Length: 293
Image 1 (cartoon, one colour):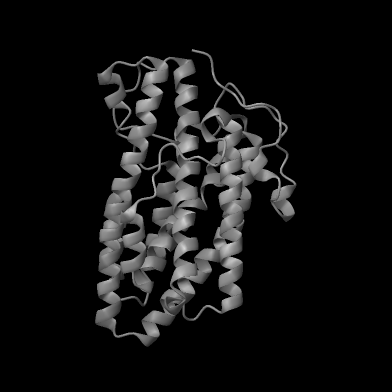
Image 2 (image 1 turned 180 degrees about the vertical axis):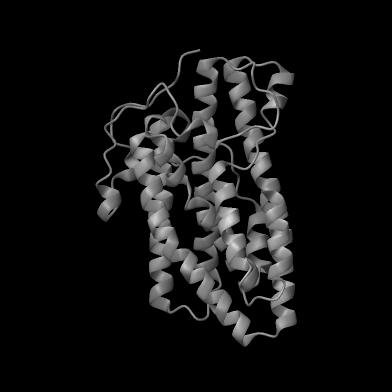
């Protein structure tokens, strides 16, 4: 099977990107090789049955999965910030507005990547693996500030290391994607700082038992999000298996997707910071995160 690549035209989702985002060079064609270093994505089972071409196409699928995941969870942040302003102390209205605006730009950038890689699948800002359901709406509604901003800090921290991994093997890194990940990480560092400001404020103003309860609730949210990620990846694998003509047993071998290299780097980073966190329950959360890596 030949590799599907997008046209040379600039993705429509990138047309209104501001500042440095609008200066991304989208002219390099989608390569018939890896978009991100192959070691970044890892499977649990034996995938030696894949041909060299299938390994490349699986890498492209994994990149699309990452971009869809970023879009999905950026929406979490946008909706939470817009729908629950009473939970955002000590952030000012102006800073919240900038937070939201930056996240919207990130969503546009990742849609542009998706449209570039598989325009026949993602035209019109379509997600093929992730689904927004009543569960997502419920999680936003019931998540108190400590729970939500702690979860946001964890996932945002994990994204900071994607360009670091790409820097290791630039010959396996698609230039427009590399630039998107670099700009995204630069702005997400500021968002992590805002998350930590909310958490520090809560640690000072709320009873320790209440903060501890919200930290424990983060574990339940992590489980729910993990299940969503597994279902989304399964949808991607099912499509990949159909396109590649894989046998059922081969498709099942691809379902065991481990944390990516950058995910593990991010979890280790935030675990180290939790060692000095004033949040009640931080020790328990840190122990769980350490088990994941």
